Image 1 (cartoon, rainbow, N blue to C red):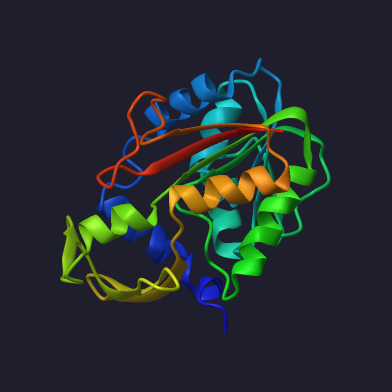
Image 2: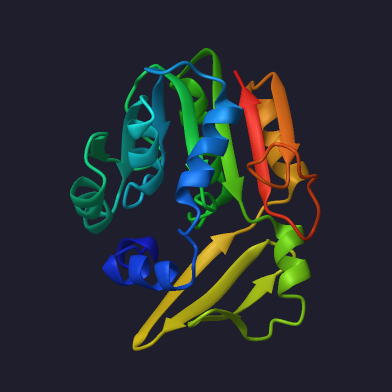
Length: 233
C-alpha cells in the first residue's frame, strides 16, 4: 500500500503543528504572493493542498484557489478549517484541466511515488494545466540539504517530534519514521537535487527558472537552506 494513503491524517497535522512546521503560514502566503506577481482573482492550483493552510490564506488574499489532494482526511480538515477554496480529491498526476495562472507545490510535496517516472508525470501534468506565461512555484527539501542535516543518519528532533531514517544516496530515496507521543508514522521520499529538478523542468518546457533557498526570493540556495523554484511556462 502506498505510504501516503495513511500518513496524512489528523495525527500528521497534530504532530507537524507541534513541531512548528505551520507556524509561519501567513508570512509564507505573503511571500508566495510576492513571488507569483499575480493580480487578485488569478486562478491558482495548490497541489497537493493538504489541510488547506496555504489555499485558505491565498483565498483570503483574493485569489481563486483550487486545492487537490488524495487524502479524504486532509480535504475534510481543509473544508472545515479553511473554507473558501474549491477542494477536490485528485491524484496529483491528474489535476483538473484549468487552465491556471499558477501551480503551487509547497512543503516537500514531490517524490512520493515509488517510481521517478511518476514524479515526472506529475510535473508534466502541472505544466499542461498552466496558461502560457503561468508560474509554477515549488518549495521543498533537497538532497544536499538532507545530506547536510542527516549525514550520520542520527536521531533528529523538532520540538516534541523525532525522526529517524536512512537515505540511499545513489537513488536519493529516504525511508524514515516519525514519532510524536503515541504516534508513529513511516514515509518514503525521493529527494532531488536542485540541478536535477531544474534540468527536468527545462526539459518539460519551462522557459524561465529562478532558484532560491527560501520563499523570500533573496536567500541563496545552499546545503543549509530549503529549495524554492519559480518556473514560468
